[in-house]
Image (spheres, rainbow over the protein chains, first blue to last red):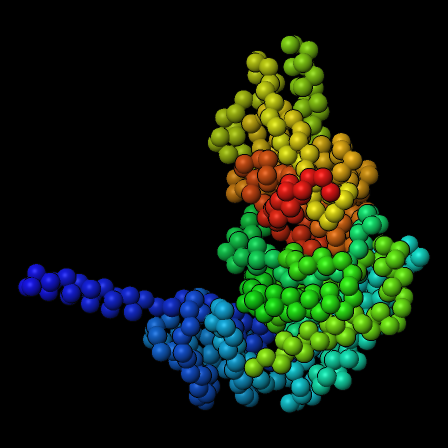
Length: 361
Length: 198
């Protein structure tokens, strides 16, 4: 019997060592909107309390955590910097513009989303403002616009006009359901892809829905499909690597990019990509819900839920999907999209899916 | 046998010259060849007849929204960039079967292709590649992944592929993010392989 004692002791030491292993936490911040958002993505569920001190918001966790990055400086009027304190506390040092904090948690993976409300009088953001205490905002993005017509159907129907038409109809239906809806464009104009995502982030949207119509050289192609971002596109490590690789890449005949991104462009993109990575589970659920409602309502060919590295979805800090509602290169499908009743059927299907997702506790 | 060897070497030289076009500046080649690559003898110095290698090319399917598969033979060159250039040249020439559609717009040429030690390939196309831009995402996805999958599936040294146009990086052709190297998406091709006939 005595021979068991060293063994038991070893087990006890082993479990103690395991329990002390800190839980990895990824920290992403986004100060581009009216408020500053911090997303903590935990490797496993840890219970934490968020407390406000003068000059700080502290996230105290029950288990040790290892933050990545451990510190960060934003020079933002609402959130100045963040750091870790001891092995269980993440401290957000707020700036002069900070007023209040909102927190919510998401599952799979476990995340804490911390919205620091306040003002940045020095650099006000020129975006459509949402009244305080408004209902959750849903942002609808009509694809293309202006000289970027998108696809054009055999009888001349233009994708940019149809996406705007569908977006306006969807807005009306969602507003009847009680949502606040912002369109990324409500006129026929060019709007860069990154600006569309930024409008959703600025408005702290709970959902981002980009509407497109498809086209193919194969005029027989028909049907609807719903996309969410592919995981490889948001692989944080791959992205970090890619950012470094891009810096090293200088072909002999390379000319600078016409637009010429600002310094720190790569880092910014990596953080934004991480943001959508945190919402892929919700994005896939939204895509599944929309696709099944579209199938039931329209009876057109089900092209399913798919994943691809759509640029417009990459920077979104909320569940984000892109609907290809049909092929306007196909004469019959183009004709259907000239019919008001059919267009209403499509947007009502999307609205039902949105209601089913947002109604969840 | 000698004639066969000549016939194989000639287009290869043309490809190599073609791939080097535009490299007239005094700046050095930016992509350092790996030790293994520099050690490989230039093809022209090889005396034995060049072996062939079988490759699988991916073209947009004529029947569905997937990639169709065609099997071809290339000269079994050692340099990943030479293998890649041969594969892209075949993509540009277009499919040989009825079940497949051209992968790139007519008139598109490959300006250069190079492979870095980190596994990223850079395929630099002429402006004609943009002819299909800003249209349907379906065709855009198939064009992008016909290129990415054909290179990544057949050249072991290539893990990801960046598509450049006229020497420049682009953010997008209208939908997909192409600002950085893309991983292959063999799910588009797997389904095609499972049902090659429609």
